[in-house]
Structure formats: C-alpha cells, structure tokens
Amino acid sequence: MERTAESRDRVDGQLAAVDEVVARYSGTEGSLIPVLQEVQGMVGYLPREVMQRIAERTGVPAARVYGVATFYSQFRLEPVGRHIIKICHGTACHVQGATAITEAICDELGVAEGETTEDGKFTVDSVACLGCCSLAPVIMIGEQTYGRLTPGEARKIVRNYEDGSGDAE
Image (tube, rainbow, N blue to C red):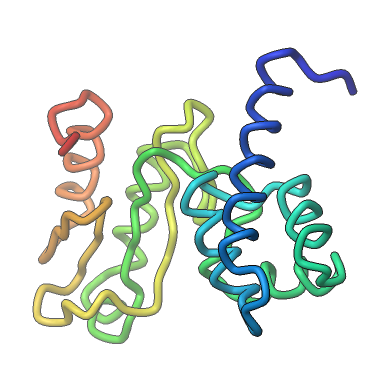
C-alpha cells in the first residue's frame, strides 16, 4: 500500500519524536514503559511503525515491546477520538445503571464500547472505577466528570460535545 506524502511526513515526524524520547531514556534500566507512555502521549496511540522504531532504538525485542503495549490497558494500538468518554462500571455505578448509560452513549454515537467514531471525535471506554461512587452512575469526558446520570442525560451531554457547546477547548 502506497502512502501519501502527507502520511509519510506524519510517520516520519512520529519516528523522529520516538528517537528523541528514546535518546532521553538511553541507558536507563526498565525504561520501556515510560518510553511507551511518553510516545503515546505525543502520538496519541502506538502504531506498528512506532513500536518497531522503539524496539530498534532501545534494543528491546519487538515482540517484548508489543507484549508490554498489549498487556497494559493504558496503551492503545488504534487511534482514539478527540474526546474520550470513560463510563464507570464499578460496583456503585453498575448498580445505579451504568449498563444503560453505556448503551445510550453507544447508540447515540453509533459505536460499540471501545470503538472510536468515524469522524474521530469520540472514543467510548468502560473503566473499572472513576472514584466518584457517591455520584453514580458517572462518566468522564476529558477531565470533566458528569454524575447521577440517566440515559437521556448522558445522550444530551454527548450531543453538547457533538455540536461544540460541551467542548472545553
């Protein structure tokens, strides 16, 4: 598959960023996770080319880099949306209707849990706990927390982000 010039430039920029991060951690034992975290923070996820470059530059086998990236849930191998919607499914939220909240949000956006909308605006994630049990059920969009939700309220919040009125940016 041939890449466009824009795509090649983006990948080259990502690889240059990887080189800078790896250089800062050079000689530091056990630095693979911090390298992956920092690179993902810059790129947004860990594409195959980026993980291969990390392996080459660190001397860590590519299989180990991939193994670490797939073992820890904090790492993503696919691009994420501009807004990550975290839906709490901890005990308090589960009992208070987190499943219905998840279904409403996924229906509103036309995606399944763990997926990103086609326009790249939203990613929907279920999380074990957001630490806001007294506000159950809870979602977070970016750094903003929304609690004591009904499915209808959750849909309304998502719509506000869709039309830009909910954006904190």
